Picture 1 (cartoon, rainbow, N blue to C red):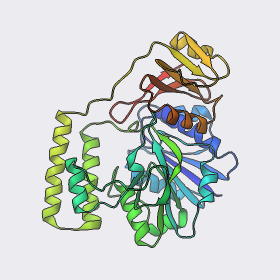
Picture 2: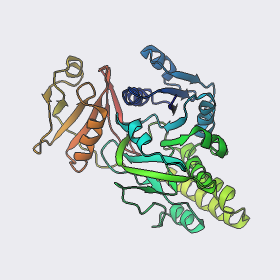
Picture 3: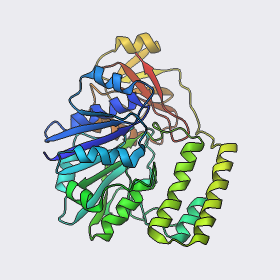
Length: 364
């Protein structure tokens, strides 16, 4: 078997389902498997997945293992020569696996692809540099630093750190690295895995010539537990990789606690939220279930420059997932278009949000 796709999910069943639909489309001509770990979701994710009758391996965890432990558990059951760690709130194009196998080098450690959010915005965490003391402190304080790699977002090349939301790695290399460090519950584990890959002499590559959607934040709540994991990850990384200097660890601790407090008291504001009254379906036929749920829905079979002031609903039965990704990239600067995603079985539609505002789900 060539590839094992590993997805760890928590309370985002519709985004997970949409992700799985895109993965099955991409695996059409590739020998592969999908392994899903449900981290004790309370939204009936397991029941929902089983009702779909997908051909996949489903691991039902009785507790929330976190990102590292759950991925390691799935990796031990994987049969693929390569592992593809993928977040549940992602969408991949049909040609991603062919593209990956065309870009394998003998000393490949990890390879990841350019990520955009559900509105087409490039996600800078797709390519990063290794944090040092200065970078960590500046990052925590919100100051400009060299945290993100200088390689152009649309280029292909070697970088230090890749994102665990989409990460290809050979199974034998993952075993050699000893998997994700389970000190991390969530966040930071991809930085340490990237570091260990390069330390062993492998090269990590970023491919900006092909994009995936990462809706972001659909498995997390922006609460004190999230903030503690997010800011605490830097402390773990600093202690494990950079230095055991107790004074610096104390400084990082103090800054982290202050940031957790401030973000709890003063949460980040959401982006501009445009409301449109016009619904347009990008498809080759009408959808009665969508019309009954949303009211009037016009149908178009291609977009044009005059498109504006609307909710644009993209039909995965008419468009390939690659077409959907390219469409949102094309429309990323159109602030008066809300982008929606209709599932292949027409059972729901997703309205994309951002990191500070979760996407909406409308069942049809």
